[in-house]
Image (cartoon, rainbow, N blue to C red; front, side, top):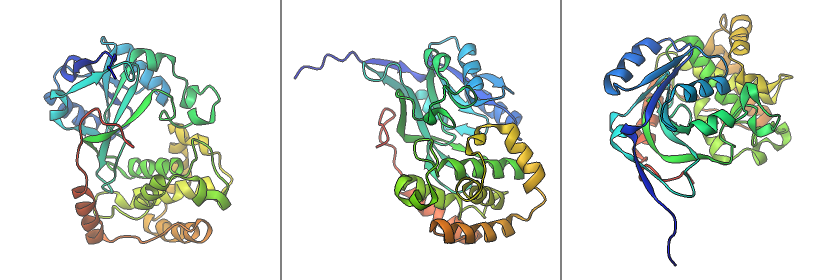
Length: 305
């Protein structure tokens, strides 16, 4: 059978690069590092709301397709020597590559480098600008042309302060509980949540004591799941950074993260049957070393299966 698909190679170095920052504690330091390795990079800073921030990045870009780097992410410079291969199946798609999480060693899309089109971001309605669909309340990834990619080309460092680490864990502790953006009943939790999300949730809730603020990330992940599944809390507020800051200031920051880890872990194990095996410093290092060694890139245009 003849292949009539028109394939277009695009050098990543020919695309605009936008560094998207909000309140990351080391955003200035990271911006210097990004600018030194990617001299043509531009920056969008301080735009509130995930949908609005991505639209602002699209408006800054002079190329129809652009690369986006989050403010707590450091990319592998070799990424910018690669090519995208566009064809009739993916020309209008968003690509999200994986990042390695410095806290717990997880390698998945959270915080990773992405490539968007100006048309996509201009027309999407997600997060604070949701069109009302459950799938669009707290995520981008359920949009039809949003492709999760297999390879990993960066490291994300969401542990630069107690608040940032807690918020990173809390957000994933919420989102990993959901079934295409919807909260399942506690009795259906294990059946409706994807197995890969359950695995990642378990790692967020047990690994990372070996890094700065790792205990806060673990406590946040457990608290996010607890408030989503076991409390009367509106889980869609996870996309509102002002709401999360209020929660931190009024309910969290005066607590001991290790005590939170203990009592929340007991509740989650009892009510949701989530495995709790809180890893020590040395155990966390051991896990991350061997988890990382199992991952191999397969090619920049390889989709995640």
